[in-house]
Structures are given as C-alpha cells and as structure tokens.
Amino acid sequence: MNVSAPSFAQSTWLVAEREVGSKLRSKAYLISTGILFLIALAGVLWGGFSAQSDSRTPVAVTAETAQSVADVPTIKPTEVADADAARALVADGTVDAALIPGGDAPFEYTVLAKDSAPTSLLQTLSLTPQVELLDPSATNPGLRYLVAFGFGIIFFMAALTFGSTIAQSVVEEKQTRVVELLISAVPVRALLAGKVIGNTILAMGQVVGLAAIAIIGFTATGQSSLLAGLGAPIAWFAVFFLFGFILLAALFAAAAAMVSRMEDIGSTTTPLTMLVMAPYFLVIFFNDNPLVMTIMSYVPFSAPVGMPVRIFLGDAQWWEPILSLVIMLVTCAAAIWVGAKIYQNSLLRMGARVKLSEALAG
Image 1: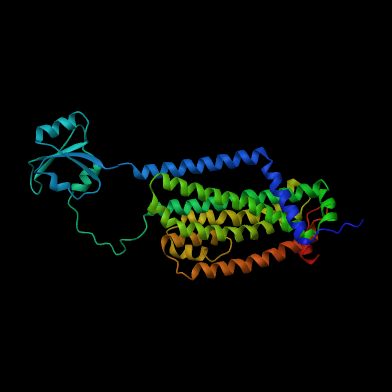
Image 2: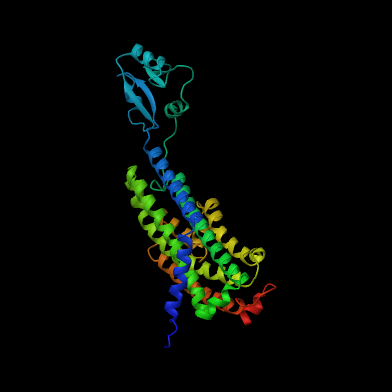
C-alpha cells in the first residue's frame, strides 16, 4: 500500500510540534520559565505596593499653622490643640516634625524637630518663585524609564533565549547527522519553517504570560490607571514582537546552518546577538531622546521596543505604528527569503564554516 508523503504544511507542523514538545518536556526550560514569571510577578507587586505606600512626611500642626501646609501633597498634617501637644508628638516619634506658632519674619511659625528637621519639609516651606510648566501632562521620568526598561528586557531575553535555542538545535542536528534523516522525510524549507514557528509559539507564550502577570499584578495593587495607559502599548508590543522574532529566528537558523560544530556558533550568530542587544541598551540610555526613539520605532530590529514606548508616551501619531509594522513585514519577508536560501544551501555542508557568499550562491 502506498503512503502519500505529508504536505508542506503538515511537515512544517510536525517539526513545530517536535520543537515545542522537546521544550515542554525539558525540566530546565520549565523551571527557568517559572522563575522568570515569579520574578516578574514579584517586581510588579513590589512596584504597585510601593506606589500605594504613604510617603508623605508626618507633621504636627496647630490651628494657627495648619494653613501653611494645607495644600502640600508631600506633607501629612496632624492637627493638635496647642504647641505643647505638638512637642509631645515629636518627642515620642509619632511625627517627624511640628509647626508651632511664632517665628521670625517672613515666617509666622517655627519648625520643631527631635534631632534634625526633615529635609523634605524644609524644602517645602522654603520660599521659591512661581513655576509655570509648559507641558504639565508629560510622563514622569521614572515611570518612562521603567516602562522602557520593561519592554527592552523582555524583548532582549526572549529573542536571545529562543534565537540561541534555534541555533543550537540546528548545529546539534548537523553534528549528529540527524538532519540527514529529517530532510529525507520533510522538505528543507519545511524544517526551517517548523523550527521558526515552534520557537515563535514558545516565545509568544512567554510574552503573553508576562503580559498576564502585569495585568494581574497591577489590578491586585490598585494601579488601574497605569494599566489602562499600558493596554495599547502592550498590545502593539505583542504584534511587533511576533514578526520581529520570526525575522530573527529565520536569521539565527540560517547563521547556525553555516557551521558544523557548537564551538563555531558564535562566529556566525554574534552579529545577530548584537542586533538583539542594541534595542535594550538604546532604550535604557536614550528613552528620553525623541530623535533616537523615533528612529528606533522604524528600524525593524528595534521597532518592537521603540514603538510601544513612544505609544505609551503619547509621542506617536495613529498612523506611525501601522507604517512601522508595514516596514517590519516587508523586512520580515526579505529576511525569511534570504534565511531560507542560506539554510537550504548550507544545511548538508559539513566541515569548515560555509562562507556567506557561497551560501547565498548555492
């Protein structure tokens, strides 16, 4: 009885299932993923509860001095009957300082403290000129840095981890000659496509898991306003990461196919590793530079980080993510075509490293 060979789609899915299954059966992978999720959850919860904690300076005031700090958001006033009651609260440590009536002009009160007056209180009470903000709605620099760091580290870790996994898998199959058995059963391009799809599923699984952790953590700590502001950036990050990882995965597989030993992987994958690392360091050091962030949001290798950050900051027009995504898709298609050609022409060549020109020429 003749058994028909599997179609290209069936072959691709078989390889993808093999990639996913081998990872899910790996205790090391499951443990490392679990640790990653726990660290992410701890970080989100810590940040959320820290934001909720009352960081105001406790100060005792009397009826005469209460108005001096009534509208100051960094002061937590406690009104008492008189100066003696205020002194008692300072003495037993209930408050950090007290404002009691009496003092030299232009002040009408005196700051009372146990051993040293809180710097934050003195800065609040000091005479300062009127301040006018041209952009009062600008994002807090600390929050901008944390969001940029979050997107950067997730892209960096996921892309590098699974890109390296693909490269090691390709070289291991070449080194053990398993690849010769595989391509006798499935087409070479189906083998490449299956590896890319399988590892993309795993990488996206981690990204979705981290997004779910962020949602749960921010909800549990009452950071609904921050979560609402991160909704669109997270969604766009997932879309850009999907195609950005496919682009990188195809190139990692192609680069690994050019060598036959594990020791030689670095010689062909180092340039790709640099491309993965670049967006992380750029967004860390230049997240407050509009020009650099704009350029990053259109370069395919950094768009998964640059564009979501700009969307969060409100710097991107509605059409910019769409245009950047179109550029990403075109680049992704070109990378897959080039990667498939290199992979197909290099996979069965053993021994010395295959030169790029030879791999492209076949």
